[in-house]
Image (tube, rainbow, N blue to C red; front, side, top):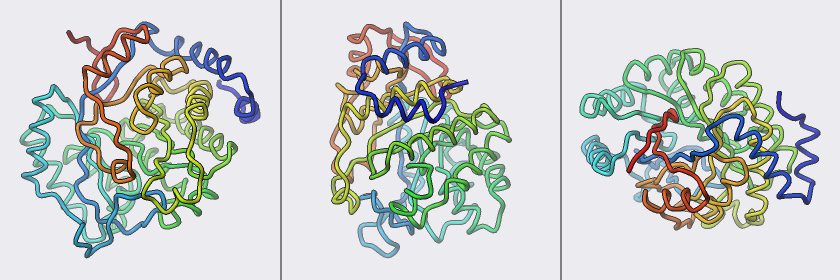
Length: 344
């Protein structure tokens, strides 16, 4: 059993950053091979940027009818996957806006066409808000929607749309988006079907430490009941070009590292915690490997959502392997379900 909510609040208030990092490393060593840090080669494909939610932290979406909106044709999606396979990739993270005109048949056709052409590729697709939207538009339950998507080729579900799982914050930053309970219902449904999912947290969007702790507690409780999360991925809000970014101060590297470490300590029933390079940059990501993280995420061949918010960080396989090795670890490529294998 991990620490209490009260202890987590104490840690957030502590000045002992190094001590918190050391405590997180103890948990990390107990959960995973202490010598290895993993990474993945996959591709983010955002099949549409049309969205009805208008979240204040998002610079990516476009309202229906916008000239800047798009819906990718299947041929273009196939081309992007072929390029990823050329780079040694194994998985696709397929996500989009909440499109009000797309029913479940559209998604089944997309999944089947990808699996038909690339049966070896792991399809890690559709955040909880997307699945809730598909279910509502199609007149289906969340469980039946998930079953139909799984049968069409869906392999696992990403943790997107979580932001902060506290409705006080959700009402402030994304009032049209699903509630915390609704997000949880999607992941519990997937876990009950034997599917794996990831859990994420976007912080630095005006929340207090207690809201982050409430988020940790919800994730830990789900994992206690289902064991279905493969990893926890905390990341910082990217404020540029967003309405919310004008109202909240940007998160610091110290706050990122502290939050990363506390998440590792709190979520001691989840095997993997990822250090992110996308918003903090690769140097902070590397330091995160001393604050409880055992993974540095994906090379993200393509990333559009935080790019739209002004984030220009980019990396490649060679750089991720270098920062892992320079931090004193053995770099190992993994697949979406965190099965690691060595390269080179």
